Image 1 (cartoon, rainbow, N blue to C red):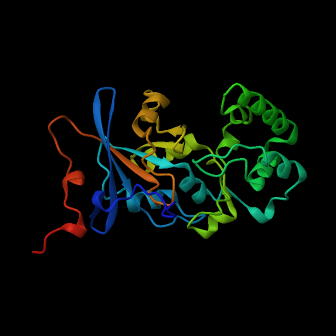
Image 2: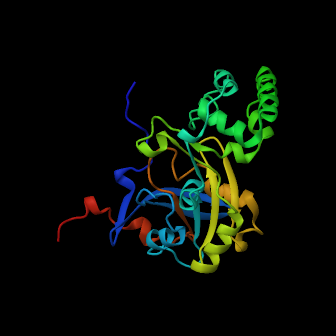
Image 3: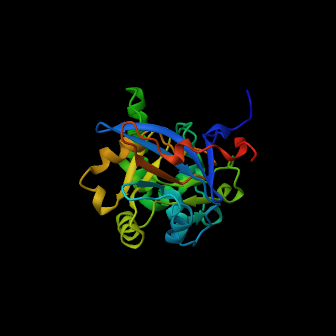
Length: 268
């Protein structure tokens, strides 16, 4: 089996404009309208950065009225420094024991990572984690998945990190929690930058909408999920936390899509 990691960032879909790099992620039809998605590449966003400045730097050159920006919850949490370091998690017996029975997922590190399970115990208390683990075991007998997270809730389901296989060494020993006040984050972005936005916790198995800008709330979570249901931001280390979503009317082409990739452009 090849050790090469899967990435959605293909050379054939890469575009560059004024030094800003993005990737075409393909169209989705939602409510009878066609939307093209562009994954906007960024630097590795560190803890404590200003998410408004990061958005302005990378999304600003492309955003136009009517666009929607989908944002990874991880990049917002990093900016908020809503994180936990492995050295601050004291591993106990129950985390070591229960993690041996947790299911493994291709979507990332789950509760089979003892430190991640210990963090869940610290956040929710041992009694709830024991109950959720028992119910999950019963659910598996009836081929029902996801019972554990249904009981413990999104706060635990949203724990991201402790990835020993990540290309970014920081994530080997860092857990990223859900963003604080996600609806307020979206309100601030709309007010300060004018961007319609979605804040999502997404992987290749599930999409959870954490926040919507005020102008999108009427459309609801289902509309947002339809726009990004294939997880266009990627599951690995693509560094594409922002997805620009643009309605493309029938018969029209977007210059962002049709521009010639820089690496294949003919010489003048």
